[in-house]
Length: 388
Image 1 (spheres, helix red, strand yellow):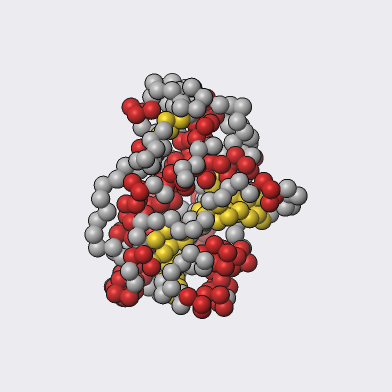
Image 2 (cartoon, rainbow, N blue to C red):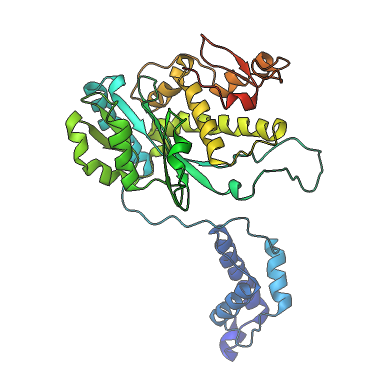
């Protein structure tokens, strides 16, 4: 120390050790913060910090960079995905929003409305060809590849807009928005057979605020009872619908869920939408395997699939499926009775396996959910089956 003070020169070995410790800490902090770093980041950090330790001619050589990488066990890695840093928010957290809604809004709705007057509507995106990301294959196989019918169908989607009540019912026709660059000339004739659906189209296959108003006027208002409440998420398209004068005729109240809380408060997200997509995925997997000549991605085929599934979901045995979402967000106090999910009942292997289809005599795959029917049908015949 006396020598350093007298000569005004640092002990280089000791200074380099201290520099290494500081660079290691800075690099580790950057990695923990999910920042993207490379060798030049380590080199530049070393040269910048060397000034603090009096190392004037420090070069941050490749060997020095390699030593830092080895100390931290760093290697070049492929970035699997990019994430966005959460924005600093001084407002209430998601948990606080949920807690406040459950303490204030839910008790008010329970006091004011009967379960048959509480409704929830939501948009859910459905791909033109639904697939699973996992399946059985040989252990150790380097690449698992499985067939799909159309490549574009795996990424393009349309919108299904179901509406359910706390009484355990699907309300009115289900609003469908197909993806069409231009409306086909025969569009109305094509959608006419689908009596349980209200079919529209946009270029993107997503709903717009004008379509939201059309859903309200043509689908919801004709069937909703007076003095009811409709629970909505924070989609901006609902705002224009809320401002429409149509709703005043039946004294309809709107309750918009706080931003970021739909996964914990919206009944359709809590139970229904997941079961709908799971049923579609299983049915289309069977069609691809047993009936490869049926093109799933055709608009008529998709409407057949959605109409058949929603028709099955309306069976009395699935009342608890709709009620469960309202129970989980505490609108209903009584837990719904145990129910089999639609795919568990309709596609039960022990009930349908080894038995013949009632229509075409192929092996059956689905069983009708209605207690007065219970017919066994194959996957292709299911698309034509519509319980009255």
